[in-house]
Every structure is written in C-alpha cells, then in structure tokens.
Length: 391
Ligand code: CMC
Image (tube, rainbow, N blue to C red; front, side, top):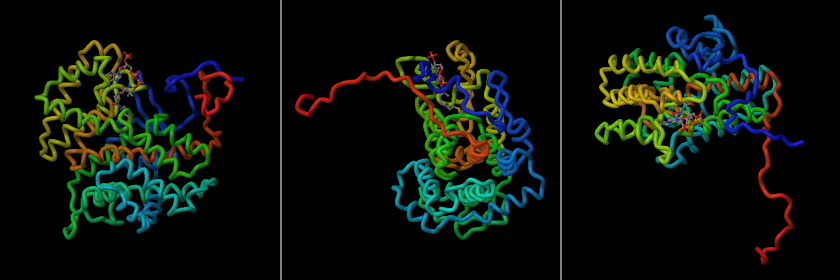
C-alpha cells in the first residue's frame, strides 16, 4: 500500500538509532560518545577525538600510538592521483576536486571497496585517514600552483596536515603552536553532528554497501552546499560584501528579513539548535584569542559581532530562534591562519571525516537495511501513449 504522509526535509523523522553523538537543540548541548564538546575542544587532540568517535572510547596512549602508526603506514597517495589533480582547471572549486579525488581512491585502492568484516573496515578507515589530509593539502597547493609536500611522519597528525598545506620549498618547516592548537580545536568542533545532511548522505550511500570512499565522497558533495558546510565560505563573502558596502549591517538585516529577497543571513539559523549553537560559542571566543595571538586585525570580526548583536535583538530573528551557527565565526579564524576562502569548506570536510566514518561503521555493524524513503505520488494517472505527430 502507498503511504499518505510525508515529512519534507525529514524535520521530524528519525532514520536510525545511534550511540555516537548526543545533541539537545533546546539546551545547546553537544556530546561525542558522552563527552561534552567544551571539554573535548579544550582538552583532547583531534586524533583522540577521531578514535573516540569511531571506536567509542578515549584511547589509551598505547592505543593512540598504534592507531597513529597504522594511519602513517597509509599516508601516501598513488603518484598517478597527481595526473587527475593536474587535469582540473585552476578555477575548479576545491570541494569538487576533493570529492572527485576521494572517489578516485576507490580506483587506486580496490581492496578497500568491498568491506564486510570489522578488520576490513579498520583497514579501509586507516587508509582514508592516512590519505585524506594529503588530498586536502594537495588540492590547496595545486590550486595555488605550489609544489606538493609529502609530509613528515615524525609530526603529529594535525601538524603534518599543516606542513603539507603550508611548508615552503627549500626552507625548514616551522609553525607557531597557537596555529596548530587553533586548527586542532576547529577540527574537533566539526568532527560530528549526528544525522545532518552530509552524514545522512554517507549513511544512505553506504547502506547500499557501496564502499567507504564512495560514501565519503558523496558526503563531501552534500557538505559543499551553502545551506550546509558551504556556509562558512558564504559567511566571509557576505561579511566582505557588507564591509565593501561601508559596513551597512542594517541593510543586510533588512534583506535577510525580506521574504521576497532570497538573501539569508549566512551563518545564522539551525535545524536543531533553537537557543544557541555551543560550537559557535567556543569558536567566537577562539576567534578573539587566535587573532590576538597572531597579531591579526580583521575588520570583518567587528562586523560579524555587530550583526550578531543586532540579530539577537531583532524580533524576526528572536521569533524564529535564529542564532549564529558553527559557520559564523570559523571563517575568520581560517583566514587568520592563512587558509584561502575557497578552502574553508574543505577544512570543514577534514574535520567531519571522522564523524562520517564513525556513522558509516555504526550503520554497517548494526546491519542496517538499505535506505529507501517512500513518497506520495502527485503526478498524472494512467494516460494513453501519444505518437510524436500528435504531441
Ligand atoms: N536568515 C534569514 N531567515 C532565516 C535564516 C537566515 N539565515 N534561517 C532561517 N530563516 C527563517 C526562514 O526564512 C523561515 O522563516 P519563515 O518561518 O518566516 O518561513 C524560518 O527562519 C525557519 O527556517 P527554515 O529554513 O524553515 O529552517 P530549516 O531548519 O529548514 O533551515 C538552515 C536551517 C540552517 C538551512 C537555515 O537556517 C539557513 O539557511 N541558514 C543559513 C545557512 C547556514 O548558515 N547554514 C549552516 C548551518 S549550520 C552548519 C552546517 O550544517 O554546515
């Protein structure tokens, strides 16, 4: 029989049981495996959080070392991947490139495609965690016409990502600890967010038993949109436009409230958070700290704070419970760290990879059925075929 009710955007439809991330949108609570996001952002390293999300417990020192060593064994990509990378026009958006390269990993690592056992899953997971930072860094360097860097096994996971992105040829690689700490924190804050658009995509693609890399590639494509991860790029572009317009925040507030105008205040609003987004709170504070530590002044930070203040006092935003989300202040930090605007959503993807992996693994271990929503048909009833000359 057909179904009679639908739930567009799945606003009130649960798709699975999950033991990974707890989120309470009314109270602004976010926890990974029971640990508060505030604690993790302050006290854990990104790789510890990766382990926690995927395997459910914080690693012992021994477990973390083994995990990192297994990842290091896989932190190279086939040289032929460079041919694909160089085939893209320089104007290509890094998210499109990253999704394509991640998908291409299936071709270069066929053994990681059909994974059923926990051991095979583990092998595919460390492969992805090893290779993904290389793809991220190479996507950026190729876009900037810079020579590629192959990383350094003696470095910590996040520092190695940073080296591959920012090292200069023929000079010793050095980095301020404040920079690595800031990236670490941002990656942790983005690491999982239960059944959002990209994660649901990963689970649904994976539910057909397509491989891990194909599922993650689909997740990257979903994340790219401006209503989801692409908002971090859109926020900076919006703040820059306001700056260029003489800082007229009122004008943009009016546009955002005008139902005839498609413009939305980017970085505002959330499907689940209706009080505040705990990630945005942490990032706002970090933005102040990082800019001060690095001695960077950015006029758009003041514009962002002004917009937030106005919105929080405005009936339209108050009534609809719209607050700054994770993407509102993150771009200001990325930019202070020297990351190009078009790479912002790639950094979001780098952070979200462990969440996608954990959710994919949970879905497979729980032997969930293939994802296949239903519909209510509203098209034509049966019609007689019309030959071409009668149309
Ligand atoms: N600016 C102006 N009005 C807004 C905004 C906004 N940013 N967000 C929501 N509204 C209005 C919307 O027009 C609607 O008004 P009305 O009830 O009069 O029709 C009401 O608020 C409810 O919005 P909705 O679109 O029904 O809510 P949703 O849950 O479907 O969408 C959202 C959530 C995040 C897509 C949306 O708030 C939005 O487009 N925000 C801007 C883009 C953005 O910042 N995205 C990042 C989300 S957080 C991180 C991530 O997922 O990557």
